[in-house]
Length: 246
Image 1 (cartoon, rainbow, N blue to C red):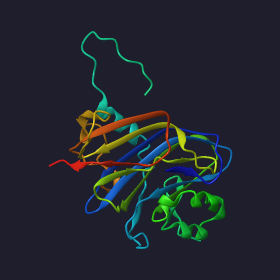
Image 2: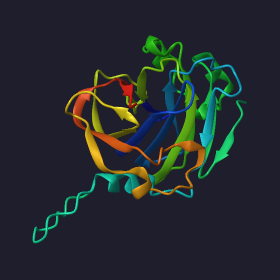
Image 3: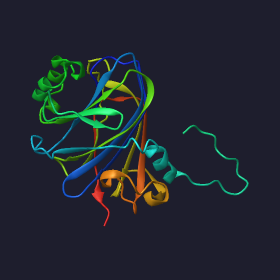
Image 4: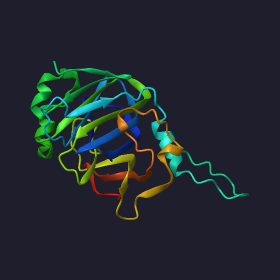
């Protein structure tokens, strides 16, 4: 779910990477291009297990890795055959300082009362979203203006270890709409994805990405899978059933 505490001008080029970590944890990396006339918070509801525990979610600082997704995308690049024409397609709660952001972990809807009022959604919004009553929330405070935001990353203890969760529901104006304009690319790793919609990368992570990424976010020995979502689509989060590779 990509929701903002106030109306924004636009958000485009959303990219989300997810993979299972050790135990019943899940890693998520999130990036986008944002245009807003004021400072806002982006709120990501997450299916966190035992959300009141102090270690339920951990933020990771990727300020030193602004090219996380452009590096990842290189895993999908296949050089053209000799003589072929190259493609030119365009490719009161604790607050932590995580790179260029301030970030807070909100264990429940009720705990938003303990968050700076500027970075909350209206209470009526949550009453329209009963599916999130058992969720927790990662909140990132974003500066005003038009800019690409460096990747935001965190690890949380997942409620469902059999489904990989992507926060894709949109709330950009305080209202919940049945459909939303998607401009998303989803990535995952270390899983055998069902269906033909997901594309597998020819290269593994160690061939294209830094080994200095924090938190074990990426497994160096696995390929990636990618799914592109564009246009008006049903407005909801995506939880992908997937089985681990042996």
